[in-house]
Amino acid sequence: MRHPVVIYDEASSFLTNDLDDHPTEKRSEDEVAHMIWKDVRRTRCTMQFFQNDRIQRTLLHVLLVYAAEHPTISYNQGMGELLAVLVYLLHVERWKVSIDDQSEEDSYVHVDMVDVDTTNVLDATGLLQMRPFAAIKATCTTNCKHAVATLLATLTDDRFLEHDAFALFEQVMERMAPMFCPHATSCDRRGEFSPRRDDSSLLQAQCDHIHNVLLRRVDPVLAAHLHSFHIPPEVYLLRWLRLLLAREFPMYQVWVIWDSIFGLSPTDFAFVDMLCVAMLHDSRMLLLAQDDTTGLLHALKELGGSHSKLVESARKMHTQHQLDALYEHFQQR
View 1 (cartoon, rainbow, N blue to C red):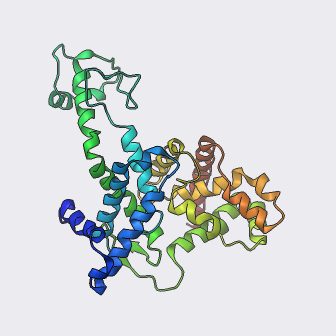
View 2 (view 1 turned 120 degrees about the vertical axis):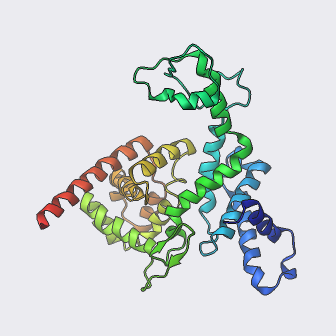
View 3 (view 1 turned 30 degrees about the vertical axis):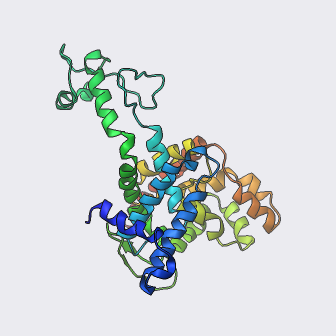
């Protein structure tokens, strides 16, 4: 793999030259770069944080490097929204540079219940070697306070926000790439896809599975109601799936929802399917009350509600689905 700085230098050159000065084969790269910059300027535009020039450049750099490193996927609208969630989380979780004035009240990251069984003041290396967090009954001690603070200050150093964001974004896209390059059956770590043999995309198949299998199993009445209006499931599921519900809830609630997705389906993010079903089921009365297509589409667009209730509902459905699958497996034996 080439060094990210080299890749960025090549990618950023798209913005510093006039489009007509490039040969024909370079124009698509120019268009990608301009598309990224246009979308970056509109990303979370209601949040002051994302109007900051440094943050916008961070988003731009990460997306440019990703597009250069994964040319098959390149860039598609929506990727910036996923990245924005990660960038803001990294910003909020940063540890203060000054250790001496660090207090529990003004920090997002909390460290407590730590015991190192020593009277000596530890440095960061000594703290790691002694593995204090393995203690069963631990108490907070001052001899490791500075060591913990030093480690967290290094791990969450704001100077490396861009580097950390790229690493996390690449991991997310390893699972999400089929959502943005749908005419494929699989992708490897480099984002290279094998083409499908039919015209239906993986994304469309996922939408059909959510609507015609999962929702029909959980709430057949609601599934039939939605089907009666002949609204393709992609109309309301596409944004939910591609953005992992990032635009349906405030940022701090999205982090909780993503925790559930990453925790219950770390390899493929499949738990988002159940979250989509729960979104529909929890709002069934509102949806069933709609008697025309326009009203139903508007209601689907405005769904949201309690993020904690959503996660809990989806978790119950997920557990029941696993039990049903296990039962069917043993029935077939």
